[in-house]
Structure formats: C-alpha cells, structure tokens
Image (tube, rainbow, N blue to C red; front, side, top):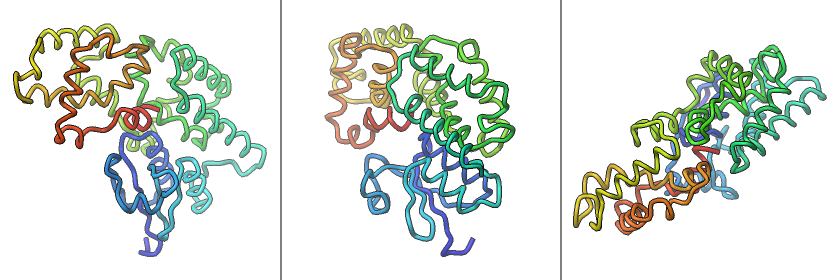
Length: 294
C-alpha cells in the first residue's frame, strides 16, 4: 500500500467496537497498522483525530480520520467496494441492514440490560435471522459484522446471568459459530472477558454467588489489616487490585452492590487507589464496562 494510502487503526484490543473495524478490514483483505491506545492516557494523535468524542476506534486513511465503528465499516465498504461487499446494493435492502445494525447498537451494546431484556433482544434478532445462514442472507454482511463482537461476551452473559445461551438463543449461537468459521472474524475477536477476567484473574467461572463467596474469604484473610500483606501494599494486593476495574461490571450485570456485599474489600481497594502506582495503572470502571462489555 502506497504511503499516502496508508491505513492506521487507533484501537484497544478488547473493544467490541474496534473488533468491528478489524473484521471489516480483514474481509477486504486490507493491511493496516494497529496502534493500541492507553485509554487512561490518550495519545495526542487520538485527541487530534477524534477531538469530539476522544474515543477509539479511529481509522486514519490518507491522513484523515474516520470515527465511529459502523461509520468506519460503511466507509471501508464504500471505498473498497470491489471485494466482499458488506452492505447490499439494493437501496431497500441497505436500509433494512442499517435498521438492524442500529438495533444492535441500541439494544445489545447500548443498554445496561437485565437478563430478561438481553434475551428478549436476542429473540427478536433470531426472528430476523430466520433460517438464513447470515442476517444478510447467504453471505456475511453488515448486520452480522455489527453483532458478532458480542460473542466475546457470551461467557460473561452465562456466568453472571446464570443462563445458557445455547438453550435461550440456539439460533444466535449457531449463527455465531458459523461466523467464527470465517478467519476475518476468529482472528479479530477478543476473549478478554471470558478468559482473562473470569478465568485468569479469578480462576473460576464465577456465578454471582461464587464471586461473593470468594471475596468474603478474602475479607476474612484481610481482617483488620490495611493490606492483604499486612501494613504495606504487597504481592497479594497487587494480584487482586486490577479486579477493581470490574466492580461496576459486577454491580451492573450481577445486580449487586459491592459496598454492601463486600465492604472490607471496597475499603481495601480505595486504600490501594491512594497509591499513585495503582491509580495510574488501572483502567477506570466505566471505561472498562463501556469498552470491554457493552
């Protein structure tokens, strides 16, 4: 690719919205430079290229920014229209696809949904899918691309919502597995929440009850000490404190109050956050929830 046609993607890998753009670029067979962003200390380039929202993803093409995940997907589809079309050419079908992509944004990613609301939304999408292999018909398209990043959250839905996606929404699960057979999808999605948060950080596929039980055990170990290591911040504190970024997610999805369920852990976390080494290293709770989950 010529230097003046270079593509640069400002992104954060766990973001479902960045995943949309990665999939679109892969579908078109386009090479690009990925530049990971620190969402706490945003780069001057990100602030320059997206001064309004200051958010990722931002695709830079010929030195000009394109912001917003589905706006970017549409741009990619229009500029490189010769390969793997994502939107139908028929105006009515294009409008139909955009309607459902908007539905996905507002109902799947755009709400702090309860289990009931989430399942209802997926049921409506199953009706739209019908017996088609993809939402667009016989080929992977715009609506499929808008929704498939939420696959990374299926394990989280099941763990915190105490549900089985394959039982509640079998057509959506079959559709997701079909999408995952595409290399452009499987190599673009992130399993951060399922693998890193639930398994690596906590070591369990924790239900709400199990999660609270684990924190209660840690509260017993903490006792009246300021830190788990005693009088000073140490190894165990360091191993646990990154989960503070997930507290808002636990509360939102698990319908619980960490301060009520685990007051000592919350006090301990606030004590740790007084350390600059901690406060400057963690992802804030709302950012974690917005970009990693929704």
